[in-house]
Image (tube, rainbow, N blue to C red; front, side):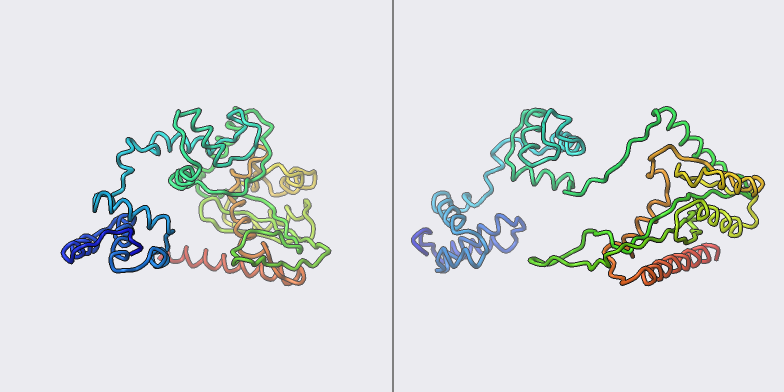
Length: 347
């Protein structure tokens, strides 16, 4: 026993085992196991290896047991007073993490644990260790992620709100015989965009790129109510691609008197050729433009993100033909799932 645990009588050993079995506190149970292993003749090194703790932990627990008996195994942190990571502290930390260090007077643009510790000390008067900050971040479910680049809308807040409210009123009050869709285009690159993936330690996966990039384009329209997708494919992202989608929409909804198309301000949506094509539909196609740089208000953007995640990101297709075949297969599978879902609801 390395002489760090006093000799115990048989009855005292049995009492330790009796207290150990029903113990549900992981930390307290580990301390009981340390004492039991030492009492049974294991060395401090053997005990540390068996319980996956450090030798210093074994010696510290043994000294506390020798000095205070079983009371020395209890977690003494409960005598430290009120916990620092209370609801108020975590609520303030949540808002701090949502902001940037520069908002709090720091020069650095990204957060570190140490910077969060100091910022929280200024705001709450409470200082914690960086390791405790890790625990606090886990408690508010914070994570280290890759920020998303965005462009600010040049419109005033009032003007932007008026336009979005007008579109919401159209969606909320669609008369019978009319339909609304979200429209957008997506670029397909033969050279794959690199995204996050799981790898084992020491491994860095490789994605073979063909070298010279080749592009294709999809234009799609997502039904705002049912989620039905109407799409066309093209080799150029121009007015012709957009007009082809409008024609496909007119054919896909033959009984609808008006098709409301909610879309962004990309130039092909308002070109002269497009304006002439829209007039040729005789009022059956109506375009409703979102405020500039507001992709979050265009629901089809999420579908394109899913397409990239499922097919194009880190892809290993040797040519654009194979890649487009996979994309069409994915879109067709989605269409079949949409049909199956709506047939099931109708039944």
